[in-house]
Image (cartoon, rainbow, N blue to C red; front, side, top):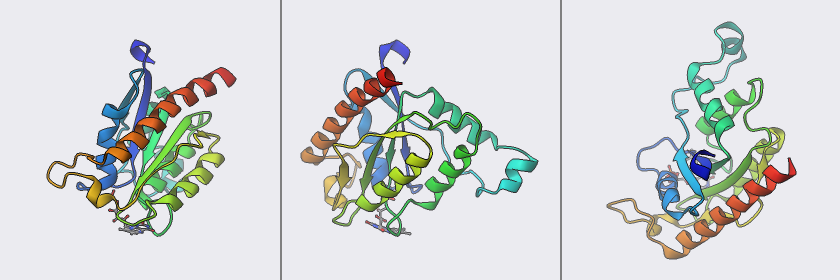
Length: 191
Ligand SMILES: Cc1cc2nc3c(=O)[nH]c(=O)nc-3n(C[C@H](O)[C@H](O)[C@H](O)COP(=O)(O)O)c2cc1C
């Protein structure tokens, strides 16, 4: 909590440059309450596919440790992710699998907020329930509501700049981030 602000990190579950979820992720700092700073988590795109043989021979890759340290140091974590085949995109799931095997597992006790964007009408709702399952196993605490599903997302961004222009979506996200700030304090007091 440097400078008295809640220090939150964000993950984007999509690896592609033009990602709509990446556009949502980049909109977050401007929508956060005054007492919260939101910065991107260290990258996970170059993690090898999880294989216990790697862990048991050469150990955890340095990038995995870097990500785990950032999660441990954060007051909260926000995932902004697409839904792939009704579930968690492989790259993101691989990152979760790697950090989940570390001693002092970094998600334990961590406040989490979930967001998803999709060109489809359901806005990636189903991936969020699978994220909730994975986070339950990892002993994280996931904010229940408000939920953020950015459905039919293509029309909600400026196609040239990638800025999130849809006011209703900006307002939903603002409300979620304000609730998340309270939730982080609640988790802190209770634990
Ligand atoms: C492998 C794959 C599976 C997908 N499955 C779903 C799905 O289950 N539900 C959905 O709403 N969109 C699905 N889509 C479409 C994505 O929502 C769309 O490609 C979206 O733009 C990906 O997010 P991004 O823009 O952040 O990269 C899928 C796309 C890919 C590449």
